[in-house]
Length: 264
Image 1 (cartoon, rainbow, N blue to C red):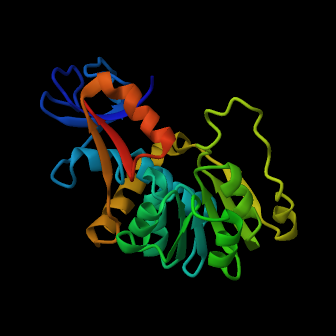
Image 2: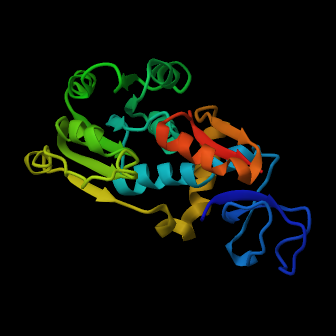
Image 3: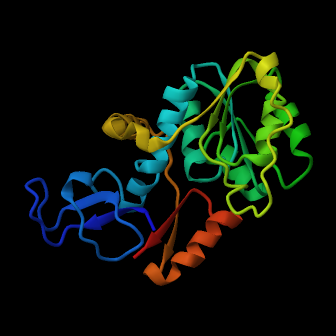
């Protein structure tokens, strides 16, 4: 199974890497791997810890960066609504939007996660979808409407967000984790005509399409982190490959806060 990871080079025939170097890449779920060096990136552990290079400075942070700035084209003053806001991508996206001068609202499951978003990450408001009607909570929090909805969840969250779009709003489909394990046909959002009424747009994207620009995102993420405006939080599960299935199930049950990392 594909998985993005951090590793130490043991042996190398590649001119850019030496034994002892720390590198990142798509290694898979394994504790040892033989890979081509062309797909690896050197990691500087003096800048941040290995888990952070998998979280805010890794693929999740890069996903948030391009989703916000290239796909949604957020600008200062926008109201940004984020689903899965206490997860890896959502928590970074919210902080980036806030640092960019946006009003940020997060949707998360449970009061503890909602408080984490506002008290520690600086979100302006947080919605607990497990406590009350998500539609009414989104309407109340959105006020005059949402300029950007960054969706990591799909389902009811997407449908509720479509109901509160402002004129010219942008909906970014980063993921739909609520539907990945569904055994029933997935029903499309009933509020999709809001896209028509509000002259809004909805676009999906894959972060690997931006592979050639990853260094640009990492540079930007690092700058925001050094300003003290980006907190990286990783939920680390120790135990190696034997605990992979357990860790993966945690992801789909929403048991993690921030980036879920398996330590080999």
